[in-house]
Image (cartoon, rainbow, N blue to C red):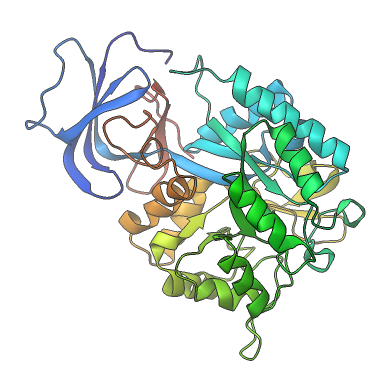
Length: 401
C-alpha cells in the first residue's frame, strides 16, 4: 500500500503501546503519524477515514534494531543507496521499522567511505513523511570498531584494529555527518576513556564490546559515561567469581543497558535468564547482529570484507567462529517469550528500550499520538501478519515471518 490520502482507522483485538494494553483497540493514522489510540466506542474517529479490522491480532510498535550489519545478500559497509535500501526493505518484512546501520572493522579509508555513503543515504535518500515503499527507517549508524581489543575481536580483521585515537574518531564522525549514534569500543585500551568522554560530548551512546576489560576497567568506563554493552556475553572476558570482568560490571550497574542476541546459538538460555534476572526487562535490548545472510538461504556471504559461510542458519567465518547472525527481531521476540518472559514485557526489548537508549522514545518504539506510524500486526503465535512503516503498508497484508 502506498501513501494514504485519507486517515486510516486500524481496529484490532488489542494494542500494546508497550507501556499499556488497550483491548478492542483503535489506532488512527494520518500520513506518517499516529494521531490517536484508544478503545473502540470511546475514541472519536474521522468519518472520512479508511477502516481496517484485524479481530484476531495485536497491534504493537515497529521493532527497533540498533545492531545490524546487513540483510537480503547486502552488507551495510557497501553503503550504496541500493544496498542500504535492500537491507531496509528486507528487515521491514520481519517487523523492524527502525535500524542503525552497523559497521565492522575495516581499513580506515574503507570505513570512512562507508560512513559517507551511509550518511548520504540517511540524509538524502530517505524522505520525510511516508516512504514510497515499505522500508525500515535508518535512524543512524552504529560504529562497531575499530577501537576494540584484538584478544576479543571475534571475526573483526586484526590488521585493521586501531588503538583509540581522537583524530581517527573525529575523522569517522566527520564522515558520518552527524549520523553516528553508538560507538562500541574496548574500555581497557590506552586512551579509550578519553574517547568515551569525546563520544559523549558528541552525543553518542558509548557501548562496551569486543573487550577484555576487568571489572574495575569496565566500572571506570561506566563512570566516564559508557552506558551500554554490545552483544552481552559475546566477545568479552568470561565471568569468574573472583574477577567478574565486564560481565559483572554490566550486571551490577543499573544505569547500563545490555544487548542480547537471542538466537539460541550466541548465548545459552540460562545466561539469557541470568541477564534478565540481573537487569530486568527494562535494561535489556534484543538485537539481531544480522548479516547479509539474513532472510537468505544457506551459502557464502560477506560481513564487511570478511567471507562467511551460513549453514543451518548459523553464520561463521572459515575458522568456525560465529560471525554475526541470521536472526530477525520477530524471531528473537518469540525466543524470549519461549524462555518464560511474558509477551507484554518482552515486547519492550525490541521497541521502547532501544528507542529510549537513542533518546527517540517519543517518536519510535511506542504507540502514542505524535509518534511515527510504525506498527506491526502479530498473531497469537507472534508471527508478523502486517507491517506499517511511517504510514505505508499494513492494510490487507497477510505475510508470515
